[in-house]
Length: 291
Image 1 (tube, rainbow, N blue to C red):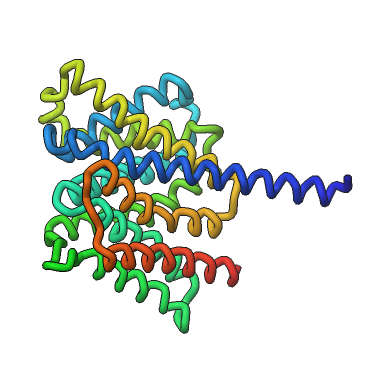
Image 2 (image 1 turned 90 degrees about the vertical axis):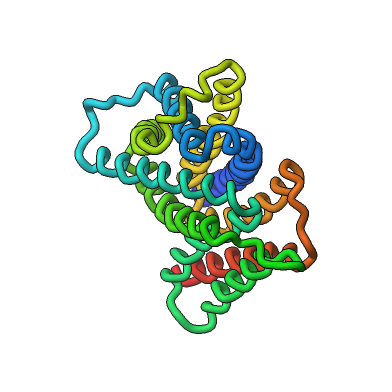
């Protein structure tokens, strides 16, 4: 076997591993978000965000043991930016799913990464993809009888969309600056600190065996497990391929909302989900074709 063949086989293996990691990550994120509905209803989105992130940060720090005193300015800046983005993204998303169906929240949320990809491919016929995504979100916002997009919930989902688009760029950068999962560990610590002013005041309400057990399970589902998988996946595959795979996120959100929260979807809403998925895949494919 030649060196070129060995390299090609290694690239295919890395890509396949990245695909598996992305699918596991999406499942964990969306079902974790769906299972969070109980905690959000009981303790509020801010306290749920803070406790989940704080527990995840503590677990990962105990495993990774980041070398805090050895990081340079670039690494600290990267961790600060990514951690703050994680906190804002999660706070906004949880506030959104408290008010609007999970499938709609995820579809709006995905407009963030879609916008980032769209800016990268320029104008022309490719603008059909973001237009299709907007049509899909509109279809998801109507249940056949009326509009289901509570304005405040939609606004929070838009905030989460901005955070998600920023998160993808910062996560890839962090993966290059740090070894292993040290960057994620530091970012989660920053995220816990950033979320504390919003959620700390209600955190004592969850200080029971049942509450802490619930938060521990949710912390593993989101953010610990999926964030770690995504950081590893982004090291193994092109960012365009990562974006195409993540375009399945709205479909995972709709499925999780249906199975866990019993949020049914009309045929038009299913079509809306399909449009968002197709638009996301289309715009990232167009972007990869230009690179």
